[in-house]
Every structure is written in C-alpha cells, then in structure tokens.
Length: 245
Ligand code: PXP
Image (cartoon, rainbow, N blue to C red; front, side, top):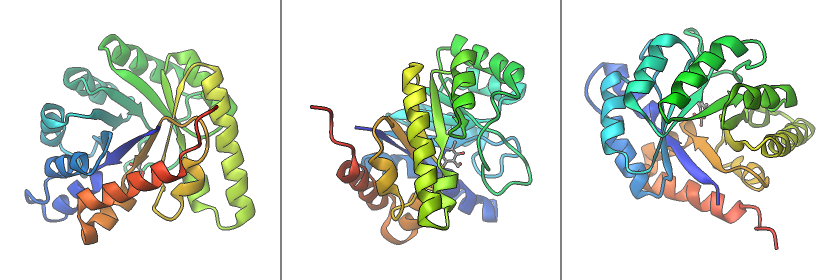
C-alpha cells in the first residue's frame, strides 16, 4: 500500500498571512498523524514564505512517521538539511516568483549542481528523491546521479482540461513508473492531487508514496485535519491497485 505524505506548508501560509503564531504547522502534523498520515512533508523555501527554520526543527523533534523535506539544491539549504536529518529530502526547482512548485527539476540540465547536493545528503544518511516530470530521460538521469527515488510531477494530469489530455498524462505517468522501477528507484507522485482527481492516479500500479498538500489543508478548514487526512487515506485504500496474484 502506498504511503500518504501530508504536506502541511499551507497551514504555515495562513499563519504567515498575519505573521503571528497560529495556526501552528507542528500541531497540524500531529493531527495529520492522528488521521492516518504515513508521512509529513514540508518545504523549507529559500524565502521562508511559509515553513520557518523553527518549524523544521520542531517537526524533526516531534514527527513520529516519515519526515520528508522538500528543498532546492542550493548549498545553504543542503547544509540545513544535513544538520536536520529528515528521513527523506525531495529536491525541487524553486523560483521566488512562483505560487507553488511549477513543474519538475531539470535533472538532465543541472546534473552537476544536483549531483553535489545528492552526494552530501546521502552521505548524511538521508534518502534523496527527485521531483521530476514523467519523462524517461529525467528518470534515467535521476538514477545516474544517485537518487534513490523520484517523485513524478502530476501537474499535467491535474491541470488537464479534456479527457484526452488526462489520458495522455496518465500514460506518461504509467511509462515513467515502469522506467523508474526498472532502474531500481522508488516512485512517488505529487502536485495538484485532490479528492476529486486522485482515483485514477491511486490506481496506477507502482507508486509507493503520494504527497498531497493544498487539497487536504483546504478540506481541513471545514472538517478538520484529522478527518481530511482520514478521507484521503480512505480514497487511496479504495482505489489502490490490487496486489499481483
Ligand atoms: N510534491 C512536491 C514536490 C511539491 O512541491 C508539492 C507542492 O509543494 C506537493 C507535492 C504538494 O502539492 P499540492 O499542494 O498541490 O498537493
């Protein structure tokens, strides 16, 4: 059964709207765990627009399930990750002007810089995952550089306007899963996944982790984090591919 990693960044976004101390993303992580989250994901951005260094420190101390830190591959953030030692680091592209992570990391183009970050993180005993678009060359380059996992960007699927576009995006995901597994990588998925669109992605065989944030935090405003996580977990279980005979 694939793991559900709950991204709690947007709890911190609400806090930062007033630069106050509530709501606390660390409390959100506790609630998410109580709702059945298998992992907690956070993105320590260079501009610290939501998650802060204090949040990262406290999450490391308190989270009992898998802790996944999303981050850029620049030296200062890598140094923080090496000191913090989350269970997993997911390397993502990062631009200050973006609303959220847009598209995957171009591992083919930035092999040298990304490779240095991967080596430093792996030396610290951290599992390293590459957030990439579902393209065979990106999967291959990720394996070559030393990533142990890839997280496939599901944005093209989530933003598809027509059934044909959606089907095409699912085919690309399916092919990239096969390629990743063939190369011995764990294959994760994330970005834009919601209660309404998760079923076909959850049904693809080969994903071992889903990282979902905005949709869960949005529902949590109305039903609470524990219930929102429970409902997403239920969907993942209901639509999971059947195990091979
Ligand atoms: N995975 C990665 C690597 C991301 O950067 C994000 C967005 O922060 C997510 C998953 C979660 O995306 P969403 O908030 O759209 O569920």
